[in-house]
Image 1 (tube, helix red, strand yellow):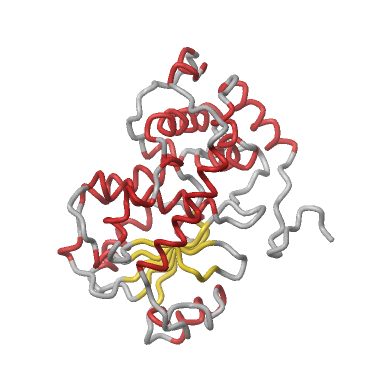
Image 2: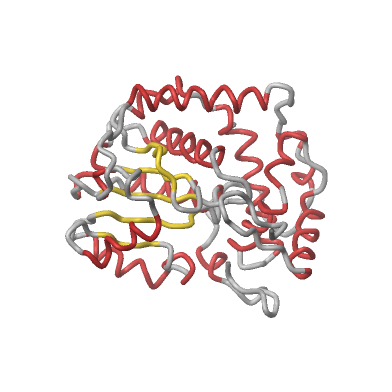
Length: 309
Protein backbone atom coordinates (compact mmCIF):
# COMPACT_ATOMS: atom_id res chain seq x y z
CA UNK A 1 0.00 0.00 0.00
CA UNK A 2 1.21 3.51 -0.83
CA UNK A 3 2.40 5.02 2.50
CA UNK A 4 0.66 8.26 1.54
CA UNK A 5 -2.67 6.57 0.79
CA UNK A 6 -5.37 6.99 3.41
CA UNK A 7 -8.53 4.87 4.00
CA UNK A 8 -10.71 6.94 1.65
CA UNK A 9 -8.47 6.02 -1.28
CA UNK A 10 -7.01 9.50 -1.57
CA UNK A 11 -3.28 9.56 -2.25
CA UNK A 12 -1.72 12.54 -0.55
CA UNK A 13 0.90 14.18 -2.78
CA UNK A 14 4.39 14.37 -1.33
CA UNK A 15 5.90 17.89 -1.39
CA UNK A 16 8.86 18.23 -3.72
CA UNK A 17 12.20 19.42 -2.40
CA UNK A 18 11.51 22.80 -3.96
CA UNK A 19 8.14 23.00 -2.21
CA UNK A 20 9.73 21.99 1.09
CA UNK A 21 12.18 24.84 0.67
CA UNK A 22 9.30 27.27 0.18
CA UNK A 23 7.59 25.94 3.32
CA UNK A 24 10.72 26.50 5.43
CA UNK A 25 11.25 29.95 3.95
CA UNK A 26 7.71 30.94 4.90
CA UNK A 27 8.06 29.49 8.40
CA UNK A 28 11.09 31.69 9.01
CA UNK A 29 9.00 34.75 8.14
CA UNK A 30 6.34 33.65 10.65
CA UNK A 31 8.73 33.04 13.53
CA UNK A 32 7.62 31.24 16.73
CA UNK A 33 3.87 30.77 17.18
CA UNK A 34 1.60 30.08 20.18
CA UNK A 35 0.63 26.41 20.47
CA UNK A 36 -2.99 27.04 19.53
CA UNK A 37 -2.00 28.66 16.24
CA UNK A 38 0.74 26.24 15.24
CA UNK A 39 -1.93 23.71 14.26
CA UNK A 40 -3.09 26.11 11.56
CA UNK A 41 0.43 26.20 10.10
CA UNK A 42 1.00 22.56 9.23
CA UNK A 43 2.91 21.82 6.03
CA UNK A 44 -0.43 21.20 4.28
CA UNK A 45 -1.78 24.55 5.45
CA UNK A 46 1.36 26.44 4.42
CA UNK A 47 1.19 24.79 1.00
CA UNK A 48 -2.38 25.99 0.55
CA UNK A 49 -1.31 29.59 1.16
CA UNK A 50 1.68 29.24 -1.14
CA UNK A 51 -0.53 27.89 -3.92
CA UNK A 52 -3.04 30.67 -3.35
CA UNK A 53 -0.26 33.21 -3.91
CA UNK A 54 1.38 31.34 -6.77
CA UNK A 55 4.42 30.37 -4.70
CA UNK A 56 5.35 33.97 -3.86
CA UNK A 57 6.65 33.35 -0.33
CA UNK A 58 6.33 36.89 1.05
CA UNK A 59 2.80 37.30 -0.25
CA UNK A 60 1.82 33.87 1.09
CA UNK A 61 3.39 34.79 4.45
CA UNK A 62 1.46 38.04 4.54
CA UNK A 63 -1.77 36.21 3.76
CA UNK A 64 -1.18 33.59 6.44
CA UNK A 65 -0.23 36.25 9.01
CA UNK A 66 -3.49 38.08 8.33
CA UNK A 67 -5.40 34.83 8.80
CA UNK A 68 -3.64 34.11 12.10
CA UNK A 69 -4.45 37.61 13.36
CA UNK A 70 -8.03 37.16 12.19
CA UNK A 71 -8.29 33.83 14.03
CA UNK A 72 -6.98 35.41 17.24
CA UNK A 73 -9.54 38.20 17.05
CA UNK A 74 -12.54 36.42 15.47
CA UNK A 75 -12.03 33.05 17.25
CA UNK A 76 -13.84 30.99 14.58
CA UNK A 77 -13.08 27.69 16.29
CA UNK A 78 -14.99 28.84 19.39
CA UNK A 79 -18.28 29.60 17.61
CA UNK A 80 -20.96 27.24 18.92
CA UNK A 81 -24.31 26.10 17.59
CA UNK A 82 -26.31 28.08 20.16
CA UNK A 83 -24.77 31.30 18.88
CA UNK A 84 -25.75 30.80 15.24
CA UNK A 85 -28.79 28.47 15.47
CA UNK A 86 -31.20 31.18 14.33
CA UNK A 87 -29.22 31.65 11.11
CA UNK A 88 -29.44 27.91 10.39
CA UNK A 89 -33.22 27.42 10.68
CA UNK A 90 -34.06 27.50 6.97
CA UNK A 91 -31.20 25.27 5.81
CA UNK A 92 -29.54 28.02 3.80
CA UNK A 93 -26.15 26.40 4.53
CA UNK A 94 -25.52 23.04 6.14
CA UNK A 95 -23.19 20.07 5.97
CA UNK A 96 -24.90 17.24 4.16
CA UNK A 97 -24.92 13.72 5.56
CA UNK A 98 -23.73 12.71 2.08
CA UNK A 99 -20.05 12.94 1.16
CA UNK A 100 -18.39 12.74 -2.24
CA UNK A 101 -16.67 9.59 -3.49
CA UNK A 102 -13.44 10.67 -1.80
CA UNK A 103 -15.20 11.04 1.55
CA UNK A 104 -15.02 14.84 1.44
CA UNK A 105 -17.75 16.81 3.23
CA UNK A 106 -20.42 18.54 1.17
CA UNK A 107 -21.76 21.96 2.12
CA UNK A 108 -25.26 22.52 0.78
CA UNK A 109 -26.06 26.18 0.05
CA UNK A 110 -29.54 27.49 -0.73
CA UNK A 111 -29.35 31.29 -1.21
CA UNK A 112 -33.10 31.54 -1.92
CA UNK A 113 -33.96 30.75 1.72
CA UNK A 114 -31.85 33.47 3.33
CA UNK A 115 -33.53 34.36 6.60
CA UNK A 116 -31.37 37.16 7.94
CA UNK A 117 -30.55 40.75 7.03
CA UNK A 118 -27.53 40.85 9.32
CA UNK A 119 -24.36 40.61 7.24
CA UNK A 120 -22.40 40.05 10.45
CA UNK A 121 -24.68 37.16 11.42
CA UNK A 122 -24.57 35.62 7.94
CA UNK A 123 -20.77 35.72 7.82
CA UNK A 124 -20.43 34.28 11.31
CA UNK A 125 -22.69 31.39 10.32
CA UNK A 126 -20.73 30.84 7.10
CA UNK A 127 -17.50 30.68 9.13
CA UNK A 128 -19.11 28.18 11.54
CA UNK A 129 -20.11 25.97 8.61
CA UNK A 130 -16.63 26.17 7.07
CA UNK A 131 -14.99 25.25 10.37
CA UNK A 132 -17.40 22.33 10.82
CA UNK A 133 -16.71 21.02 7.32
CA UNK A 134 -12.95 21.24 7.95
CA UNK A 135 -13.43 19.40 11.25
CA UNK A 136 -15.05 16.57 9.27
CA UNK A 137 -12.46 16.26 6.52
CA UNK A 138 -11.17 12.71 6.08
CA UNK A 139 -7.49 12.02 6.87
CA UNK A 140 -5.14 13.45 4.27
CA UNK A 141 -7.76 15.72 2.70
CA UNK A 142 -7.74 19.53 2.75
CA UNK A 143 -10.72 20.32 0.54
CA UNK A 144 -14.51 20.13 0.52
CA UNK A 145 -17.41 20.27 -1.94
CA UNK A 146 -19.96 23.07 -2.28
CA UNK A 147 -23.39 22.27 -3.68
CA UNK A 148 -25.35 25.43 -4.49
CA UNK A 149 -29.08 24.87 -5.05
CA UNK A 150 -30.60 27.72 -7.06
CA UNK A 151 -34.21 26.55 -6.70
CA UNK A 152 -36.35 29.65 -6.10
CA UNK A 153 -33.41 32.00 -6.57
CA UNK A 154 -34.01 35.46 -8.02
CA UNK A 155 -32.28 38.83 -8.25
CA UNK A 156 -34.06 39.74 -5.01
CA UNK A 157 -31.70 37.32 -3.25
CA UNK A 158 -28.60 39.19 -4.39
CA UNK A 159 -26.82 41.24 -1.72
CA UNK A 160 -23.65 42.88 -2.99
CA UNK A 161 -22.39 43.60 0.51
CA UNK A 162 -22.88 40.03 1.70
CA UNK A 163 -21.36 38.69 -1.53
CA UNK A 164 -18.33 40.92 -1.11
CA UNK A 165 -17.78 39.96 2.53
CA UNK A 166 -18.32 36.27 1.77
CA UNK A 167 -15.76 36.36 -1.04
CA UNK A 168 -13.25 38.15 1.19
CA UNK A 169 -13.51 35.67 4.07
CA UNK A 170 -13.34 32.61 1.82
CA UNK A 171 -10.50 33.88 -0.37
CA UNK A 172 -8.33 35.35 2.35
CA UNK A 173 -8.86 32.91 5.23
CA UNK A 174 -9.87 29.63 3.59
CA UNK A 175 -7.66 29.43 0.48
CA UNK A 176 -7.55 26.25 -1.56
CA UNK A 177 -10.34 24.65 0.48
CA UNK A 178 -12.61 24.02 -2.52
CA UNK A 179 -12.33 20.81 -4.51
CA UNK A 180 -15.58 21.16 -6.46
CA UNK A 181 -18.47 23.63 -6.64
CA UNK A 182 -21.69 22.43 -8.25
CA UNK A 183 -24.17 25.08 -9.34
CA UNK A 184 -27.43 23.18 -9.52
CA UNK A 185 -30.14 24.59 -11.81
CA UNK A 186 -28.77 28.15 -11.90
CA UNK A 187 -31.24 30.63 -13.45
CA UNK A 188 -30.65 31.93 -16.96
CA UNK A 189 -29.79 35.42 -15.72
CA UNK A 190 -26.87 33.93 -13.80
CA UNK A 191 -25.04 32.78 -16.93
CA UNK A 192 -24.07 36.28 -18.19
CA UNK A 193 -22.54 37.08 -14.78
CA UNK A 194 -20.48 33.90 -14.99
CA UNK A 195 -19.32 34.70 -18.53
CA UNK A 196 -18.06 38.09 -17.33
CA UNK A 197 -16.36 36.71 -14.21
CA UNK A 198 -14.89 33.56 -15.75
CA UNK A 199 -11.95 35.17 -17.65
CA UNK A 200 -10.74 36.78 -14.42
CA UNK A 201 -10.48 33.46 -12.59
CA UNK A 202 -7.44 31.23 -12.68
CA UNK A 203 -7.90 28.04 -14.74
CA UNK A 204 -7.64 25.84 -11.63
CA UNK A 205 -10.53 27.79 -10.06
CA UNK A 206 -12.66 27.83 -13.21
CA UNK A 207 -12.29 24.08 -13.57
CA UNK A 208 -13.69 23.48 -10.09
CA UNK A 209 -17.04 25.10 -10.97
CA UNK A 210 -19.58 22.83 -12.67
CA UNK A 211 -23.05 23.75 -13.93
CA UNK A 212 -25.60 20.97 -13.50
CA UNK A 213 -29.17 21.03 -14.81
CA UNK A 214 -31.74 18.46 -13.71
CA UNK A 215 -33.11 18.18 -17.28
CA UNK A 216 -29.69 17.72 -18.91
CA UNK A 217 -28.40 14.10 -18.89
CA UNK A 218 -24.89 15.26 -19.82
CA UNK A 219 -24.50 17.49 -16.78
CA UNK A 220 -26.32 15.01 -14.50
CA UNK A 221 -23.45 12.65 -15.22
CA UNK A 222 -21.24 15.02 -13.19
CA UNK A 223 -23.30 14.12 -10.13
CA UNK A 224 -23.04 10.38 -10.77
CA UNK A 225 -19.27 10.64 -11.23
CA UNK A 226 -18.76 12.40 -7.91
CA UNK A 227 -21.44 11.05 -5.57
CA UNK A 228 -23.25 7.91 -4.50
CA UNK A 229 -26.69 8.95 -5.76
CA UNK A 230 -28.44 6.57 -3.35
CA UNK A 231 -27.20 8.83 -0.55
CA UNK A 232 -27.63 12.14 -2.33
CA UNK A 233 -30.70 14.30 -1.61
CA UNK A 234 -33.56 13.99 -4.06
CA UNK A 235 -33.36 17.77 -4.58
CA UNK A 236 -30.12 17.07 -6.47
CA UNK A 237 -31.40 14.06 -8.37
CA UNK A 238 -30.51 11.51 -5.70
CA UNK A 239 -32.58 8.84 -3.97
CA UNK A 240 -32.52 10.22 -0.42
CA UNK A 241 -35.89 11.80 0.32
CA UNK A 242 -35.13 12.81 3.90
CA UNK A 243 -34.23 16.44 3.09
CA UNK A 244 -33.07 19.03 5.63
CA UNK A 245 -34.24 18.48 9.19
CA UNK A 246 -33.22 21.29 11.53
CA UNK A 247 -33.62 19.13 14.65
CA UNK A 248 -31.41 16.30 13.38
CA UNK A 249 -28.90 18.78 12.01
CA UNK A 250 -28.84 20.62 15.33
CA UNK A 251 -27.93 17.43 17.20
CA UNK A 252 -25.13 16.65 14.74
CA UNK A 253 -23.66 20.12 15.14
CA UNK A 254 -23.85 20.04 18.93
CA UNK A 255 -21.97 16.73 18.98
CA UNK A 256 -19.29 18.19 16.73
CA UNK A 257 -19.06 21.26 18.98
CA UNK A 258 -18.43 19.05 22.01
CA UNK A 259 -15.59 17.23 20.25
CA UNK A 260 -13.99 20.44 19.02
CA UNK A 261 -14.22 22.30 22.32
CA UNK A 262 -12.90 19.29 24.24
CA UNK A 263 -9.80 19.35 22.06
CA UNK A 264 -9.35 23.09 22.72
CA UNK A 265 -9.94 23.21 26.47
CA UNK A 266 -6.34 22.55 27.55
CA UNK A 267 -4.81 25.05 25.13
CA UNK A 268 -4.56 28.72 26.08
CA UNK A 269 -6.12 31.21 23.69
CA UNK A 270 -3.42 33.42 22.11
CA UNK A 271 -3.50 37.21 22.10
CA UNK A 272 -2.25 39.59 19.42
CA UNK A 273 0.69 40.38 21.70
CA UNK A 274 1.80 36.76 21.42
CA UNK A 275 2.26 37.01 17.65
CA UNK A 276 5.95 37.76 17.23
CA UNK A 277 5.62 38.53 13.53
CA UNK A 278 3.64 41.70 14.28
CA UNK A 279 6.96 43.37 15.00
CA UNK A 280 8.72 41.87 11.99
CA UNK A 281 8.89 43.96 8.84
CA UNK A 282 8.79 41.94 5.66
CA UNK A 283 7.48 44.57 3.31
CA UNK A 284 3.84 43.75 4.05
CA UNK A 285 1.36 45.97 5.83
CA UNK A 286 -0.26 44.61 8.95
CA UNK A 287 -3.86 45.56 8.31
CA UNK A 288 -6.62 43.23 7.11
CA UNK A 289 -7.34 45.07 3.89
CA UNK A 290 -8.26 43.02 0.86
CA UNK A 291 -5.28 42.04 -1.25
CA UNK A 292 -5.21 43.37 -4.78
CA UNK A 293 -6.37 40.98 -7.46
CA UNK A 294 -2.98 41.10 -9.17
CA UNK A 295 -1.46 39.43 -6.12
CA UNK A 296 -3.54 36.34 -6.84
CA UNK A 297 -2.78 36.09 -10.53
CA UNK A 298 0.92 36.92 -10.35
CA UNK A 299 2.96 33.84 -11.24
CA UNK A 300 6.48 35.03 -11.99
CA UNK A 301 7.71 33.57 -8.69
CA UNK A 302 6.41 30.06 -9.35
CA UNK A 303 9.45 27.73 -9.32
CA UNK A 304 10.41 25.93 -12.48
CA UNK A 305 8.41 22.74 -12.94
CA UNK A 306 6.06 23.49 -10.02
CA UNK A 307 2.59 22.95 -11.44
CA UNK A 308 -0.77 24.09 -10.12
CA UNK A 309 -2.45 21.44 -7.97
